[in-house]
Length: 278
Image 1 (cartoon, helix red, strand yellow):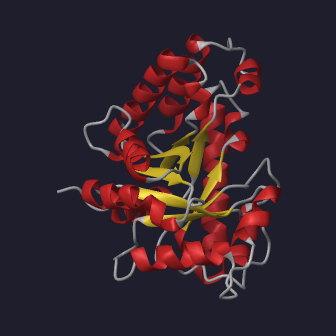
Image 2: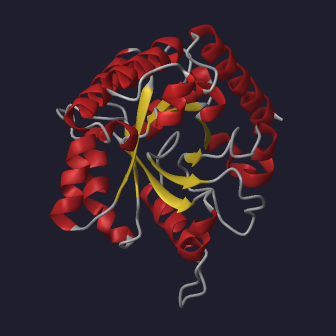
Image 3: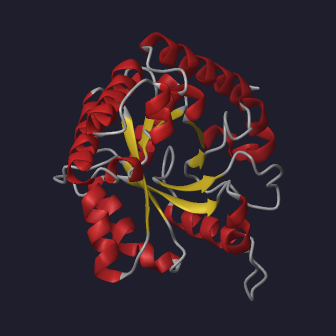
């Protein structure tokens, strides 16, 4: 039986460090690598990242949109990228931010969380802003398949605050409500639950939010967005050990040279380890 995602993630973080590297083949990055903005460039980019880093990072986070823009051939590249990364022992977090209701949410979940799906991933980012309960098909299938979810809670984009910091009638913000739901999902899980939150590393003091959800906290914003590894303890407090910092451009900009990609990834990983252990 497959171990729950939270268990597998904890093992990977302890063995390799908590760094998550994005696979974001947007047009400008392909150009900076000297690649064409087409399926051939997409495939070369993705294969290079996986081959350079799959034996050293805990998690890859492919951004589905950058593959979907090439249609069915781009999806085929995404399928191979996921399969190659998982075969090399790296966990795959699909960044697709799906969110809908009923049978549509169930279909999204089956796309990424059903074990026999060609896009089966270890975890999926989801949007709860049709109501947390709308995620139930994904929650149920994640439990069944041993996968995980990362729910948008306190994101790093400035526009997110108008929804996530809005205050409910009970006096609790929407973001805090999402964190509370996740804490319930993870109750009693050891060593860590499988239901995480997306919480931006650029947000500064979050001491008014209870981030101790007994689950992972995906933290975008390290590197190009301005946050550093040294910021993590101040932002995440006692939950810092469960933080999965995501770096995309800070690593990917060093390509296409595999050694340079590896060096950048190792540097970020070392900085994060030192900050978390401090």
